[in-house]
Length: 602
Image (cartoon, rainbow, N blue to C red):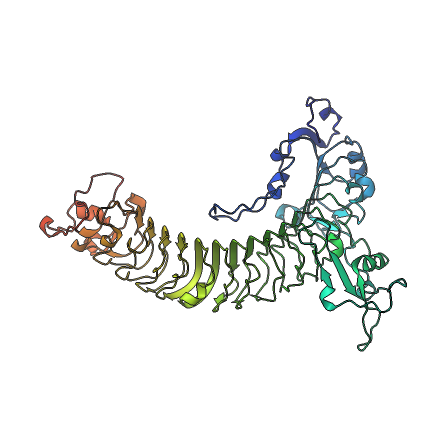
């Protein structure tokens, strides 16, 4: 595909009224945003992890782009477009009280089309819902054969709020009827282990072998037939279930908010080039067995914001090249070792915003290449067992939401030797000693918003590489001596104790953060939002380490006469009336008593 040299007004002037025609780079188009693999928000960058894949091979090409707003009479409007369009976006206008049908004849002129986006009306928009009483009848309808003419060229397909016709099989019983060919030897037997075969490192697709359902008796033997024979028989019993199967060149498919209730393997059969598949915000409750077996090279699969109730290993079988799996916002309540097939290439899995209450032992042992994992949601308390996370040998980032762990013990976090970032939210009453001792590579530990009341003085033993520990927004009333120490947390740089119930700190709190004859690694300590009891013992506090910006400075709660005074302001201005001779100077620590006068410091 060469670049367009003539980018003047010649091509644009062929654009009919109701459409806009431009020459643009692919990387400047809106569709480029959804073709980029999803980056989870607030997720730190992991140096060794690259979640991108080659979906941008035409990013610098100049493409002929048309955007049309359609209502009634759309066929005439689209027929006036230049036939050499490469990127076409169709937007539905009006009240949406009439159906607009797209058929094969609608697109057969566009022999060079690379990208197609069709967006229907959002009937949940109050401005539309208030005036439209025909939403069940109106909208954009895509006929079963509408996309067939685009099979050789189309790379990107984005459907939003579009009704897909006749995706269900006419009869489940008929769909399973197969006839054994006469030319097969009668004595040919296939072992059960041969039912599913795959070509892991090739790009030729997968083959399925199906059981015949023509014998309905319980005692009758069922025949086993190859997938291609089964497929030939199926052609006589289905109605347009292969809506996308002719799109051999397709690499990215997005079906968003299209009210899909059922999907089948026929919909994706033969999509060997497909890398990205998103079925977000539909009404899917179950995934049929082997549903995505026809997409052997798929790298990203999103089933987010559906109503999925459960997962079985055969549901997602065959996705041996899958790198990202997004199942956020469903109704999954548990995960077990029977939930997943082999995922030898999976690097990111998101099960957030599910009412998940159980993760059974050894659930993730089959996902031992995964580097990022997200679990839990607001709908239910997540309870972890011994070995729930076992086998995640390459995991670097783990987020756990709405956990219910009365005592966080060592065995809960075993099996993740490569973990560098851990975030937990929920209810953890106490943190036991050595709770993180198996996480020797941990860099960032976030235990904020966990309602922690007690923490062992040896809780952080073994975290020699940790740089940031966040215990903010908990219920801590006491910090045990030696909890933070550069002797053990040798690379510690930031401690966050904001918004707890602390009234005082151990007398040697700052001493343990200083190594004699070495510059301190700790750069910032946040202590604001606590009901500090201001006394002269605070003279040992190191103002060079504590965040003292006026908005985030630690403030006195008692005694009453100093309430809302900044701690260092009270020390510096004499509010505490501490005699200089009684202030303690810790051995090896520079003087910290000459508090600088700075209007920005409290």
